[in-house]
Image (tube, rainbow, N blue to C red; front, side):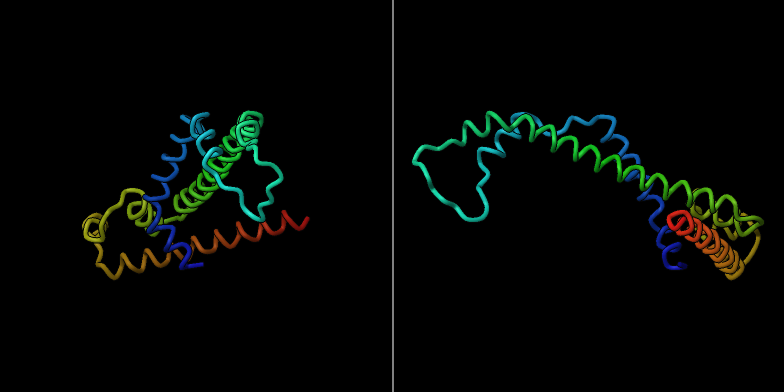
Length: 163
């Protein structure tokens, strides 16, 4: 659990950036265009066994009758994928942020400054008037408290699913 929390602390800025990017993609979703869909259908090669029953190609007819349904299905599937990824990251970040802000005392304040304010260890030392070792101890205690909160969350999820 400690390694996962350490990873989340390191990746927090990237996760926030990814969330903003996904939000932008969802708000400005256009999907695949008709031209791109037709091009992909024209130049796609069938997979699997190929049996020739006629010398006349019916590719144009197939494209004409199925491209719109395929395009809408692909666009809907892609939009759902973006939305699912967005809400997954959003939930992860909301819990993480709430958990960090709920840690009491100076340990919580140090972790808030470290994660959300992106303060360096030197700046934390100056702000809290303590040594590097003390900052490390505060950080370790805060991560330990976070681990407890994550374990409680996991237990609640399991209990909910098993009810």
